[in-house]
Amino acid sequence: MLEKQFIKISAEYNSTLDVNHFTVNGNMGAKVSISIYTLPLVLHDVNVTIKYELGNFNLAEIGFSVQTERKFSDFQLETKDHFSRLFRFNKDPWRIKGADKFFISKIDAVLRQSSLTQLAIKTVFEPSIIGNYENGTYSVKTRFSLAFDNKEDSLVPIIEFQKRMIRLLKNL
Image 1 (cartoon, rainbow, N blue to C red):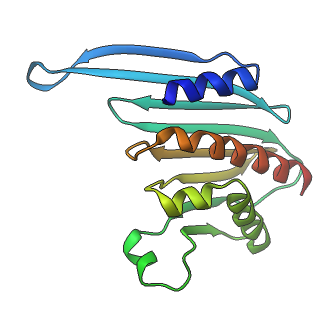
Image 2 (image 1 turned 90 degrees about the horizontal axis):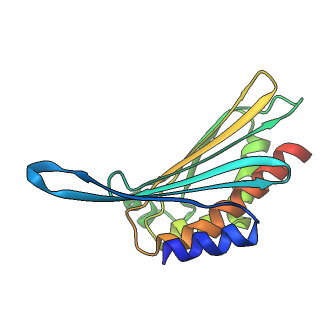
């Protein structure tokens, strides 16, 4: 199902999907099947790389860098633990750290608009997203475990998040 979603998105964005399936030796003679899906996209004239690895680490990594004259503050985003979210009135799943509260509020809006907030509420989607500025370039790196059902449901919202973050960084 995940591979079909990657193929569909690859065609939609006129990109080339790289798929590698292979087997490695595991513990005690076991064989571990690994699949790596790498999809390079160009979103708003910015190169974005999406990589999903299944079978060993079960990890997704997405990243991009934008040239910008404005020095945006660094940020770090994680999800609140499920226990905390159960007993709080604020069901917002995000914990965002950063110096610029206005920029943080814009990131929060991007999360909601991209459907990542809904995904985090209804699944065990727990990304770590880090944004940092260095020498005229703002980089955003996203990592998350793929140890949840319906992994393919994360692909469209994560692409939408990347698009909206790029627009935010280019237009703010």
